[in-house]
Every structure is written in structure tokens, then in C-alpha cells.
Image (cartoon, rainbow, N blue to C red; front, side, top):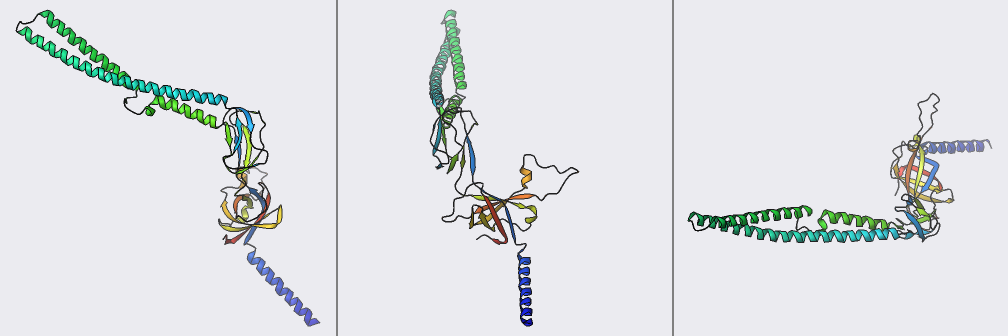
Length: 333
């Protein structure tokens, strides 16, 4: 009997030693925390225009797809603005086309004026030659000189008128109509009117679930909150680990995840990134420790953990609590 007790005691010591050795070996291999929460892409949509909500096309907590129409704002004012801007574009194009036509006319007039000037100069020189031979009168010479002066003044006036037209055409008489500043400005106003009109139709930017819907007829101003959209795909875990646990933490390490709502179900994950600062640094009022009453508190560092997709997994919701355990010696497959 004594020998049996001795054997059992020895076996107990061996088992205890083995367990202790195992725990010693793996004690620094796994790090864990229950300060972890599920996260999804989330956005609070706001109004880009002012007006009253005329229709709401979704209900609370409805699943939507990217591009689905969520609600519409009264667009009557914006349609009028669009039509007005479109008319301004047409007017600006017509004005440029008219200026180009006038410029071409002035070009023809200038060519004619130069031709008339050359002819008047030739006639005047002919009269001067005849006067040296006493074959013409002073009155005839004066008449030719007067005609020459008029032709020259006419050329100068047309050149100035052409220069003014060219200035109104931004120095380019034959450029495409759409490249002139007046047309470009009018087109910009039309583009802005089109954008404002488009903003009266609020579309889902990505797949997700809508909530906190506004009321029909509610008046909106630019920046007014409309609704919340939470993605229902690609969740991740934000786990806040103690700073003393991060010595062996690396991106790519394997993670075992349990969500409090489903304690019997496990998810696999991967360390995706480590925050550059502790959570306290991101708070609105970071703690100031330069006081005589300072007490050292272990800080938490946010870690982003990517979840590996699984078939027929339970439904996950943003904000759910989770427990995560990271194997600091194993990379995720």
C-alpha cells in the first residue's frame, strides 16, 4: 500500500511538473483581452442642399445596396437653377459665335481698307508726278491727298475695332467655343446646378443597413444629419491590449475570437495593424500627468484584427463585445 501511495505521489509530482513546465513555456506565447468590440464601416450621411424631404424610400433597419435611393429633397428650386444655368451657357456660346463672326467681318473690312489705302496712295503719287510736269491742278492734288488721309484713318479705325474684338475673344479668334472663359464660367455654373440637383437624391454609398431615419417633410440645411448607414460586410475587431502585452505582438499573427453573444462559436482572425498611439491620446481631453497626485495606470493600445470569412456564421452586429486571444508565435494561414 505504501508503495502505491509513493507511486501515485510521484506521478502527481511529475504531472504537476509537466503542467508547470508547459505553462511556463506558453505563458508568454498567448496574450488576450476582453476589451474588444466588433466594428463595421459606418457613416452618418448629411444633406448637401437645403430643402424639405419630399419622400423616404427606406424603412428603419432596412438593408440597402450601393446606389439605392434612400430619400429625396424638394428639387423645384434646383431645377429652375439648372434651367437658368443651361440658358446662360447657350447665351455665352451665342455671344462668342457672334464675336467670331464680327471678327471675320472686320478681317474682310480691314483687307478692303488696306486695298483702298494702297489705291489712294498710288493715285496721290500719280497726281504728284503730274504736278511736277504742270499737268494737274493744286485742287486735284489736295483732293487725292484728302482721299488718302481718309483711307488711312479708315484702316486705323478698323484695326482698332478688330483688336477690341480679339480682346473680347481672349486673344484667340478661332478657338473652339467651349474654350472661352465666358462659356467656361457659364458651364461651371451649369455643372454646379447639376450637382446640386443630383444631391436632392440621396443614394447609399455602399451596401449596409440604414437607421435613424429623418421625418417626411423635415427641413434640411447643408450639413444636416440625415441617417446612419452601417456596412453589413467586412467586419473587424478593435481590441485594446495593455501596453505591457505588446512586446511580441506582430502584424499577421493568428487570433482566436469569441463573441459574447455566441460563446460556443469561434472565429479566426489576423492582426491587421497596431495603433500608433494609446487610446488616451485620441481622447478629447488627454490626461495630463504632470501633477503631484499622479498615479501610474497601464495604458491600452488599440489593435485592429481582421476576421476571416466563414460559411453560415451567426449574424454579427457593430459594437458587440468579444474576447480575443493572440498567438504571438504563429502567423495566420
